Image (tube, rainbow, N blue to C red; front, side, top):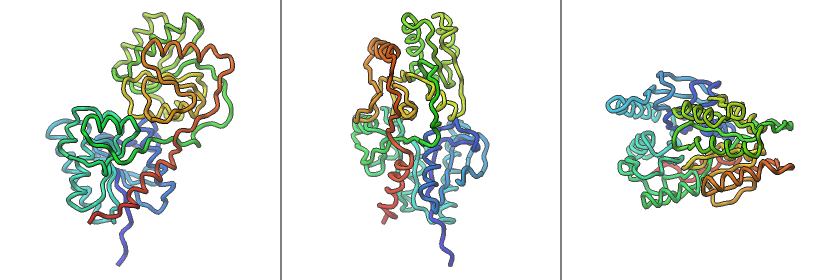
Length: 357
């Protein structure tokens, strides 16, 4: 009798629609690719709940993706998506020897994954990736996880989970970066300040715009760029115009991941104004690109060179001024976490635990 291929199933709210879709969840993309790189014999299947918005099965860098196409519809439609996911898992469990299930975020994917894993005595880990650690996450009551099944994205996320739910995740595994994506040749750092992320209220990009206005008093020709899209775009553009930053601040919109990394290589400073951040892959990417990084959030307890943590807007502006006035800044890359090591750390959890009894 032919043995079934050993398979890891990853449950995610979304996944790239094709190999050119590099702007969709870059950290998770890199992780899945690294997983295939370090475990070429492992069959990896991604079950994507909501995005792409059309139901389909396709290959992505040698990984099978099953998109349910939930389209983020609520109520009955969402429950229907869960039922479809459960039935797909049932089918996969017959076709393959499942090593286990890995869910991105403690949300609907973890809820379905946990239910199926318990029913079929499979290992299931949930990788908590940021805002799911906040208070008010209903899925904690529904799943009732223990610390053994939780992977925290950072030391900060682990503390948030303990503070808000009285559970300490046993594992802490941050996102990683693929160093091969960064150009080796030196480039001119012709961008003074860069920002990148979703333009939503949580990210506080109005503080970014206001900081550029403050810095312009000292550096009249300052050049800043914000990458990303979101509901705050129009408001931020209006704020920039009102502060007379037309020639100083540009909005690049959503651009391919590789182009964001290129902009980081060209930047002197990376300013991250988010009020809450589980880890923020852009922080580690900017550090490896050689930029000086300023943020309100400190994801890991360990301190990293070139990463400056500030408490308020005033401290932020002072630190940014100090960085930009330095005539000979240190632009040596700082590597926080290589993605290959991150993939090894995650897959080792399944290798160590084996099937449930």
